[in-house]
Length: 370
Image (cartoon, rainbow, N blue to C red; front, side, top):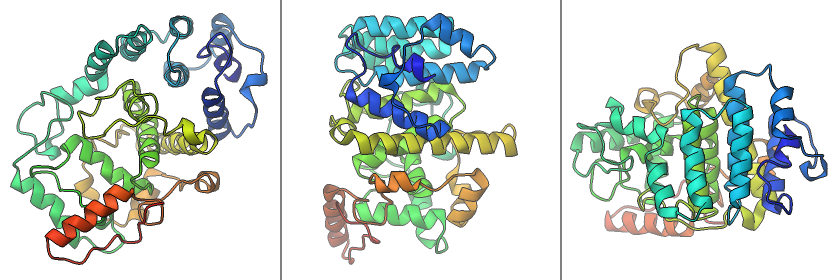
């Protein structure tokens, strides 16, 4: 695996520092093997395909996704790298419709057609299905026109979120309520709120113990994308990297996340560890759920979390097999929502402003800007 990654997503001059750090961290996190991928001899597509011929299609797709992940860290993306990754996909038998959606997006980026890439991304498989069949618990009375459509007036939805205040101490629901209050976020169902689809990921911030600064968003979506058995969910990780690292997918979330480049590369050794740990936690969650509850969905963005809102957080984590953040990730700066570094300066100030406007005392529940 590592030898294939030494060449597939690399420009002619070899791996970049960002690619090298991410690949090394992923291999360490997923396998426990520490090595420097840049010191390995490259492995061509035919050799790689032969070496993993006993692996199933799901594994081979994951290999191609890892190549796409590292390809998308290049700025710009050389067309020859895109062609090389697609060749590996062909030899691995992973160039089906499921994978072609994202490979087409990357091909557009490599050719400089960012507008077309964004259109293709928004029509990619995961979002397309979400548009066609939105989960009932999101209170959407119609199919969405866009994955990030907002529900501007749904008092029943708003009250459902607001009622989380009354969930027991230590519960998932109480944690989400405090998460919103500390940051001044508006509960879905009223103007100014996040779209219900986007709000779904806020449950994961609390469930997985990640703060709300941009670097924590990368961790959250790394976990969400990796635990989902639907390979199309890789587009969720591509989205945050396109927003917060390269800027390629500058409007992927329709302004609900403002793109801001360089959040991975500016502290790459630490962020590579944090991203890799998040993806490992997602992989282990998927393995546990598949092994313990066959047929149960591993899509955390379509789960009805209100059904679990009153349950203790620790019970839900144990049921899902969700591992705690590793000591290495914590040492690298991974933060919970309830400590210094777990909230951005803007979010804390906005939370104070909202509290003042509502005539109540502000409480960050421990969160402070770094």
